[in-house]
Length: 504
Ligand SMILES: Cc1cc2nc3c(=O)[nH]c(=O)nc-3n(C[C@H](O)[C@H](O)[C@H](O)COP(=O)(O)OP(=O)(O)OC[C@H]3O[C@@H](n4cnc5c(N)ncnc54)[C@H](O)[C@@H]3O)c2cc1C
Image (cartoon, rainbow, N blue to C red; front, side, top):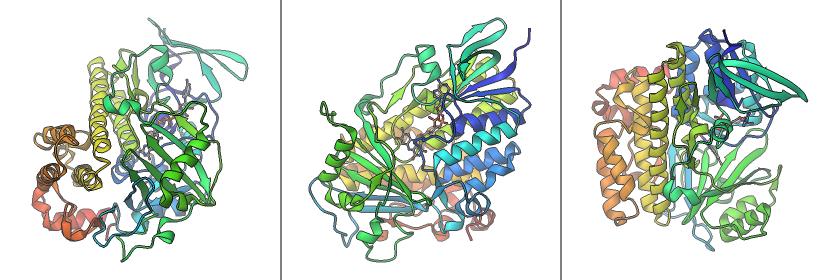
């Protein structure tokens, strides 16, 4: 007996909808089930160069040209002005100590700016998820996916005739069957609960929690602390991070007047303290950050995520697979969520094309958990060195170097040069970076900073770790040309690559 659908996707966040579109393009009958109704709030907003490149590759490979403008700020503004987003030219970090104000330092020792693009036109974006996800869900419908929102699904019932689902929608019962189930329902979501998937340890990340909201009236940091020079990009047109000894804050500005902000901490919640009081108490500890939020108002209630990090022990089975965010999540530091999710979508797309072979689905689950574990090790390391901002800054160089190298390898059509998430499968960089992440915080800062410099050097295409830049890294084609040999290329080939991606 045939099933009603080839694939059931549970959860219509951006990832579930994108995978539904791809599966339709691959000729599969798809049902996409969402418990909520768009537009709805979702957290996870800041994109990166590698995430945008992965999105672009998926859109091209699967004939989804309507998604292409969403991969760069300029085309997005022209094609979809009604879908709100934010301009992200880079990654901005400022270091803060409790009770102390913030003063610009001549050596820029308390800051780090890493440009991700040379100009606004081809810049990355922050996705305003209520608009972005609603658009993607409507595109999934356009591609022919059956879409059920506002639906409460009961547990899956696998059997010889596929997987049966019962549920309710608008007070009415419903039932359908599908050949394969993809869980795109986010952290500790649908299959995590239905299958009772056990959680693996996230080590030191277990205790991290977050408090966040959306705001209006947040001041630009560069209006209260103008830079003593011309920075590589306006510091607020970025993912702006305030780094403290025990956690960090993100500040992401959208073009609709809303700013997303939240902090992470490992301190326990004091019993009876409401989330908004906790927010105010956190700001009170960091006066310069408080100044940025003076007069700002939250546009929605605060969300408190008590245990942000989690990872299941398995992420796939004979009739199911979880997208990365449903399989685990560590911390939003360095925005690894979107690239991991898009890598997962790309891998599942190949498996769907090949008929979802069991061995491939097993391997998908292992790789997904391996990537999450790698991200976990990096984030643990970053937290350990947060009290020493110089070492924290240097450790981010390992991330930026791997991200730039991976992006360049893909753009040159040689992704095999940078295998695995953040090159974790690279024969030398992979094991060496893991070793350094594990040592971070356990050896003295100077030794670690030296080791990171040596780690980064062979893959350093972005002119990183150069002291004379005093922690401001622009997007400089000259740095790339000078390092051409490190990626088996030459300046001419790289010039052509930059021209194709609109750099010049
Ligand atoms: C605090 C925080 C900040 C983050 N910041 C960033 C960032 O800046 N950059 C970045 O790259 N990543 C970030 N992430 C990660 C990012 O949120 C995820 O990568 C991204 O949201 C994954 O998208 P998704 O569609 O898989 O899941 P989600 O966005 O979680 O969507 C899941 C969908 O499934 C639906 N759903 C849930 N349960 C059910 C059910 N039982 N039945 C049907 N539907 C269901 C939900 O309503 C929702 O629509 C952040 C994560 C957190 C927690």
